[in-house]
Image 1 (cartoon, rainbow, N blue to C red):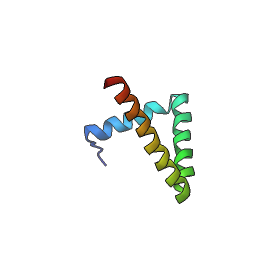
Image 2: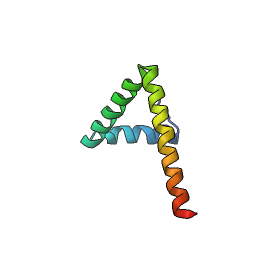
Image 3: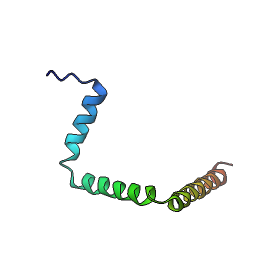
Image 4: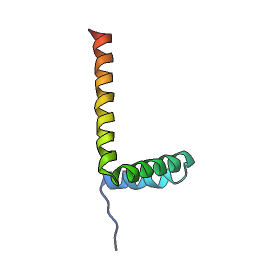
Length: 69
C-alpha cells in the first residue's frame, strides 16, 4: 500500500515523531490529558472552568483598558 499524505498530515507526523524525543513534551502532554480528564468528567467542574475563563478575560480586558485608555 502506497502512503501519500498531504503536507499538513506529513507535518503532523513529523511533529509527533519529534515530540517523542523531548521529555518536557511528554510531561506537557500528560498534564494536558490529566486536565482534560479532570474537567470532562464533571459538569460542575466544567462550569467552574468556564467561570474562571470569564474572570481571566475580564481581568485582561480591565488591564488593557487601564494601559491603553
